[in-house]
Image 1 (cartoon, rainbow, N blue to C red):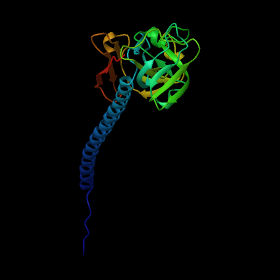
Image 2: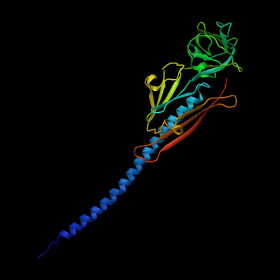
Image 3: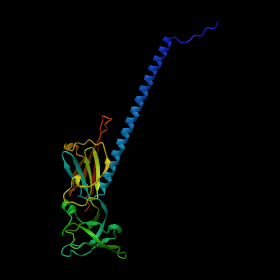
Image 4: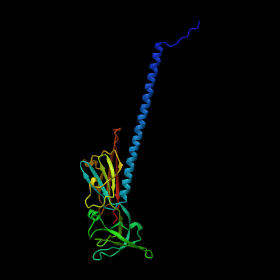
Length: 269
């Protein structure tokens, strides 16, 4: 008679224990691998957004008007960096100055889009750059243009009463756009534009709706050593300098990412 043998209960329990231990070991190995992958992806995303924000702000600052960078800090909630973008520059032959305040301005052929822009000459203080209104200023709104190709010049006419208080030693002018602000608010870095020109720098709440450029910042604006923006405007001996410090951190990671960067703004007047 053929006898058929099966597994005993002890053998089945032993096999189940072996499979359970093996499963736990494999699961732990996969879990560690998954955690490493998630951490690496998070680090890469944080690094990518920090590089994007730093690179964009640096490029905008490098093409900004000399002496236009300024900062505004609220020790509890925010710090803002404001500057004036330059859309073009060139050389002029003559500018309207007292007593001929209504005279036109002859420049070496200008960008065709200069109409409606503001022209600024020899501006080296906030009052020169940001004050809007009244004669005797360093900037004027282009009211009309007329090309004279035969002479290689463009004649710019300004609104009535606009004139320049002084000329540039290098006969240089800048065509500028409205100011731009970058503000660190809590853990968000936001960019504002289109809010107009103000003699006094404005808080984020007065700048309209901004665009978020980066998140997960941990700078404490109440500590001078952690301020994201530090401005040192140009002097006769050196160019303008803006120091940037961004501190990033993830809730999933314990170590911060701290970026230090300096942007030099040539003092060309």
